[in-house]
Image (cartoon, rainbow, N blue to C red; front, side, top):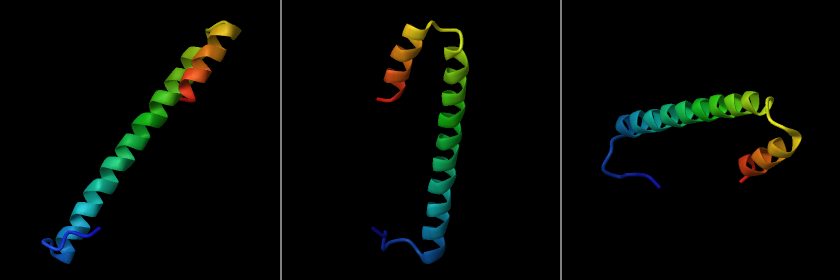
Length: 57
């Protein structure tokens, strides 16, 4: 879906902004996942299984 109101340069700039935002979100998600994995090391086996099942949702 392209926005016909934007020039090609504006479209590229908008796309670049969206890609940057997506990259930042991906980096944040990766960091959160790593932190959660680290925190799970201190859980009992039962609690780790529960946390892992919640992470999968």
